[in-house]
Length: 549
Image (cartoon, rainbow, N blue to C red; front, side, top):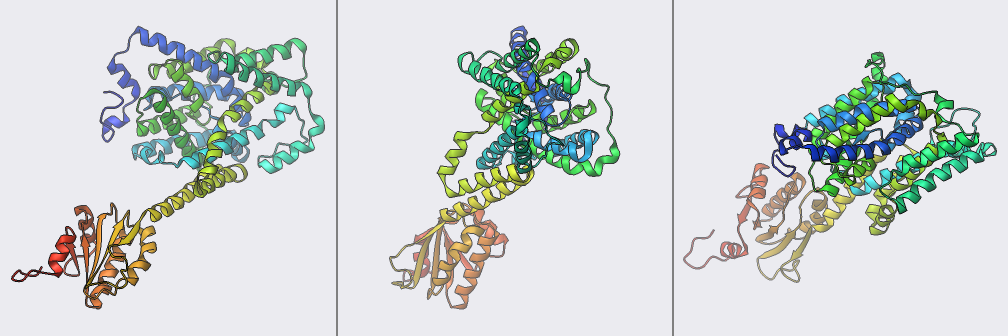
């Protein structure tokens, strides 16, 4: 079975892509390519996973646990050839808020519960619908996340000392950081700036080099050699463990408090994962199985939680790196997880020397790349509707809540779509002056979908022409859709015409739409269904000797 083969509506839609790759034939050459790609992704994921974990308010080791266990399971069971799972920057705000609200045990339980929700969503085949998130919503959401990530790293980037905890709400955060501006550590500023400069410079001149790892390694060596007064992983968190923990369940008594967080994790994880899979499809020409991907993401979140990790999702940057590195299938993602495990076992003590300012500089670069500045500006220029959606989503994500931003943005996008579809529906008269018909009929052509949005717009026009002495003719060959509101409007129009001694003629209606109207009670003799306007002429002006229709 290939990526473009059928089978997305049966059991095969849950078949892991690993099985597809295996059936196509998997040899040493593909394994070699996957090993190289997996190593490349692991080099990117190593510092990034720890940076995301620290920014999320948990220890750096939990970022590695998440990338190892979650990343392996996503590739093993997922519906995408190239998806790389692990901790994602989009979750930083939610995870940090969750830890603050219900603690680490609550976070782990919420992660496991979100896995159950994702499995249920996949089995219910909701993956197809989650992919329909409007583009302005995704751009506004991603840009908002980028701002929040950058704000979360200002403390470490400037080496600030706060008298209390750092506020989560962005305005209060900025105010607290500004109040502590007198505690700036210039060594931390230099380390963060150096890290960002090296990453961006290597990206320009040596794009295939592991810029993030090189930059963090250089910053670590510089801080250690010069003895700079910069906080490191070791000074803040101690040494990392050199093995995965024993699987364990968290405190199940927290399930009521954890459930709302789990729902937010599941929603955000589903959107992020499927967007990442779509990006991989666009880069590779493959086709992912969305429901299989949701099930895999659910299993991965359960596995991550059992091993002390947190939310797992498909990660766009690492997935794109996987595709560009020449991956041949899910084996590269599994190997990337194993390479991270090898680092944990062999070289974990080295992580103690990593400056937190260097990780902050790394995340600042990630946030800059996530901001989608050109797409954001393009949407602001494209139309008022798109501008409203992208701005509302962005502002709500930054100043209110991630889930609220997505939900409100989606609702606004729906209203904009309804307005545009209503404007696409139209009526045009056959005569120049339909209100003063030249004969016993008036003819209007309806075009576009006749649904609740258009029904309200066209209803007033139809009311004015319902005075036709004998026949009101609606030519509807250009109508692709009629919903229940539109059907109700036509039903009312037919009744009014009948009370005035006339009749409503529906011409050129597609058979499926006619059956729909009949199912809602609109049938002859209340209304006449005719194939074309010639049939109307024959019905209203029968030839001598012929039977009137």
